[in-house]
Image 1 (spheres, rainbow, N blue to C red):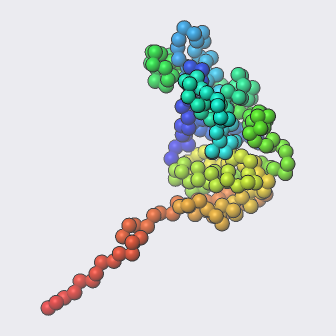
Image 2: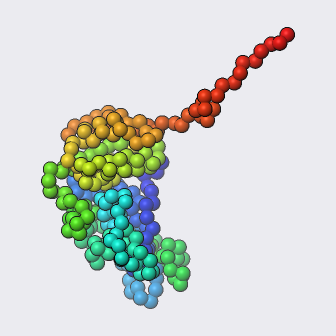
Image 3: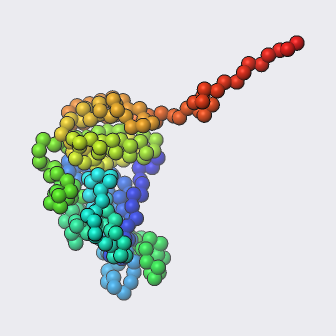
Length: 268
């Protein structure tokens, strides 16, 4: 499986951004992501290139924030989006992160300036062309978490007895087992957030804000693995643990039903 995956295609004030393709590296409270930004070329957009970069940063920040929230997060009732429909969780979070996404980025650089292209992702039927860039963005996860804490959506990372630990997941053959592990960890009351900070072929690293050590979290997954998975702890210490995951194949239909073929007999 490729270490790149597309997680979102969103619209931001007429600027569409396709971001959070891959987590490349991380520091203690930072994550470096590769992001593709797309901006429609219209008379109202004076600098499409800057708009595309801004869109990529904004969407990467929004996705980082969404990773810190429960899977079932819903915006407060009554808030309506620009289209007159109830606002989506990601759009609500993006709005409340503020007007300047650059405050959550420690640095960025344009890897590819793909320039002006026929519109494919801008989400506006009256737009013929869009501007596309590929950017490497370093995110300040502490700043993102602090903003979410100010909104009352998460607990501050430095509060209580929580600590950030790392869980290395090996043996991945698809993204599905990793998603199952993340969901299981997020359901743990002692876990505040689960953020992927690295993803390569067959291996991922999760940064977990929890009140227990990495070894205890790994042991919990091994004892109570998600359906269809086998989880084994292969290495552990208080700050980091490594688990090996294996998908349990489904039994063939005939075997599951307990059917057997009758032996042939010779009537002669």
